[in-house]
Length: 131
Image 1 (cartoon, rainbow, N blue to C red):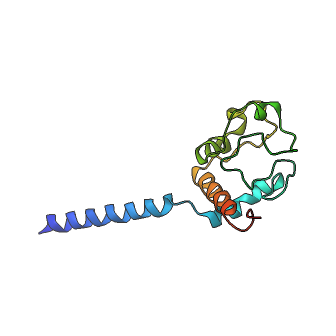
Image 2: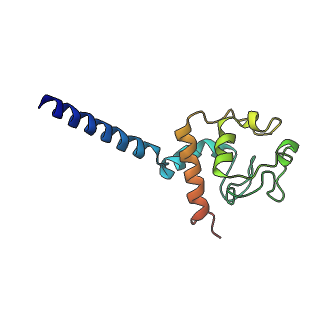
Image 3: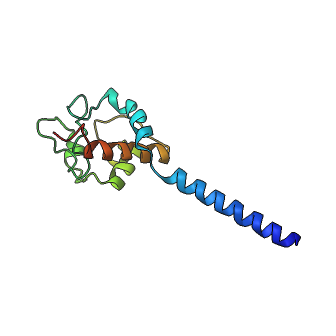
């Protein structure tokens, strides 16, 4: 009898922790919008600032926004901005593209990067970028 209770408790704990991991793993675009404030010092969604605009980012070749003055390193990088490439770049921009003009140290937390990418994906599919 005691063994059955232990097994039930263990299964419940496993299920609860799995649900928690699934809930944690889902990117949060609303949280990503808040984190985007870090980016807003140099970037905007719809217009170029010190850095290029982010509307149209996913699927775009790095260094290709017309009229924006990119570093030679970014122009020659050959990167296409997929979610995976963006995650890698945001981890450490200078390591991925040595010589980039983007001197930001990066976003060390995987959850923060996932949330930022979810926000950019949502913004690009929604009103801010659909004009």
